[in-house]
Image 1 (tube, helix red, strand yellow):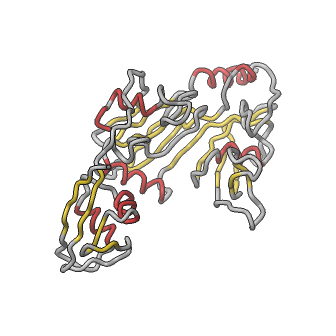
Image 2 (cartoon, helix red, strand yellow):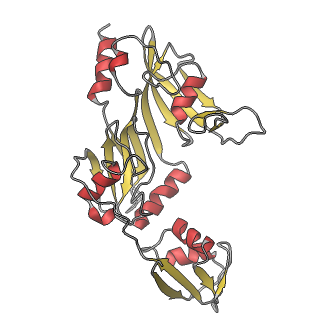
Image 3 (cartoon, rainbow, N blue to C red):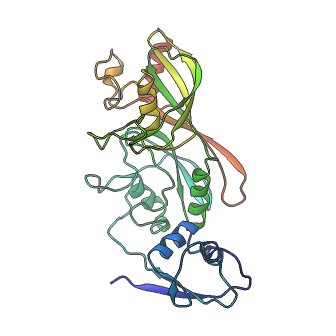
Length: 312
């Protein structure tokens, strides 16, 4: 049985939403998202009765908050080198290499970014959830580049809120097959799981099928004879979004064996990953909301392709 820590709260003002009122009093312990989950789980009671997140608290109310203890399920830090591009008391921005999985899962019980972060900063354990401590967003295994890790729950909530409200500016470098036309455009095509291959995403045009609005802006950086180097900006954050959107307009990513072309020319065939790199990230720092921008250059295996194309 999971041990619970129970906290009793009262309020000096009335009219605030329950989730907001509780999270404002327990800022150092719980994010608003965590409070909402505790309400759903029946662990936050108003006058000994379960309530909704939208309930408006009264000064006469007594609210009990039962916080489950952090359970150690065996994730241990590992001595794995990290390319840290930014760090403060609230967060890390890491330049993740390709082939590194972000969080533990079946088949990836060791060697993940989470293991590396815990080896560097053990206090991150328990932040935002045991399986993904501190992880604000994610990158595919074969996508390299910038990823933010929160060091505490307050920072996690602050950063996740920015992602949810789409105020984080995420720019990716992508090498696509063909000469992409027009040179700059918005791809606005809803994405969802493919019916016959649930692990793959696809553009869903049938209104009867489940999909989510998905928008990607791109602009051409360099047009080559058979390829185009693009900067892509995510306006939404769907699984495999850039990869699927570029394939949808018949310009799939170089090296993408899931959504792209299996037969490619040398030297591109020898790179065992798709050409997608999270190169630029702009967000508000949790401590003072100052806007900062972090960049990461192409890794050598991708830069080598560009050098070959430039040298013709």
